[in-house]
Length: 286
Image (cartoon, rainbow, N blue to C red; front, top):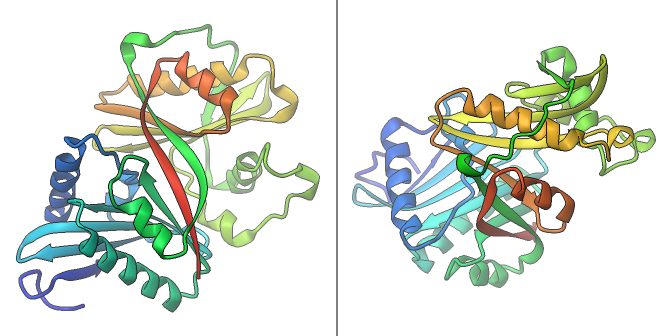
């Protein structure tokens, strides 16, 4: 896929230039005016991001399609497709990703699409992609921030020595801790930056993660360990995370939640968040 952008229609890159990012944001902005949202990880636009692959489709010098792909374990890829509602371009991007995944011996692709997208959901189904689950994207409105007493919770930035602890906390509620298998490859792939460990009276009670990129902040991994749940610590931890975000300039603060997690959804909606988009995930096994 070599050559300059003037000589090629499809580029596969691991690192984007400033002009690439600007072109992607321009295309995304045009689609947002059509009331469509996309799950594009801001971290993917940073330099030296080994977990991301970028597929860009140009007509002459104008970007007409973009596919963002990420993998942190070498087993599964998450992918979002951004076009000007052009099915032919979407097919080109999907085929490029499928070929790449097969070359890398990756077993599964999770395609993520706004439920309102006019072409992507139906297109993925043609590839035998099965519906997997739904996630809500929530944005924060400072005017509706319902501050509560932060309680004696204390947050400390995570360090490299906390990798195994973060891995355990990330699996809290999903895997019984006595049955948790510590996958060293996944532990080593964990991003430490932005993680905070929550303490109450010197006891570890949870964690929260904040990702920053050009004024956009995402809140991830709000976790309270099982034995400390039901005491209001989830709200306290979320509020401390929000406070960390609003203590610095930001354009947008968002988080995402599984549609089946009614308890967390209620917590977020009462803390100042509102629903922006519904993302459906489609699983394609290779």
